[in-house]
Image (cartoon, rainbow, N blue to C red; front, side, top):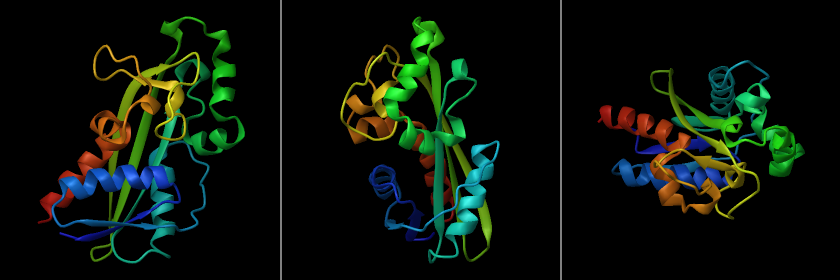
Length: 196
């Protein structure tokens, strides 16, 4: 099993969540951050974007490396921001999404989900493995909380049942129990443990 794994990301929040989860779950694993400049592919799926990014990351990161691409998908907005979430966050931020959602005043119209795609490259075998995680929830009417990053302040996950708090109102450990990222990382963890 690889004892050292590189996570190619410039997002410190993503790295901290992955490190807290994987180092706790995979004995002896050391996760390090590789801040490679990755080109954003304009594609139809997170899987295609993730595969393209990991192929770019292996050029500047040593050893076994993985990347993660994630997005917030809002059916009422035809899946927007979806695969463009990182760019939309920079341009519109949470306030922009809330503005777009003003024409959907009923909670039943505010369904959304986060999806994460973690893509691992094993250098020795040149193998690429894909792990997917998803969590359903709703878009709030206002920003709440100051934990997390990205669209966390406007997303209330549907797990656990009856939850009313946004990801930004949860601590990292609690979020790591239920998030889309945690679900994809759980699959990655199971794969890493199977290599032992």
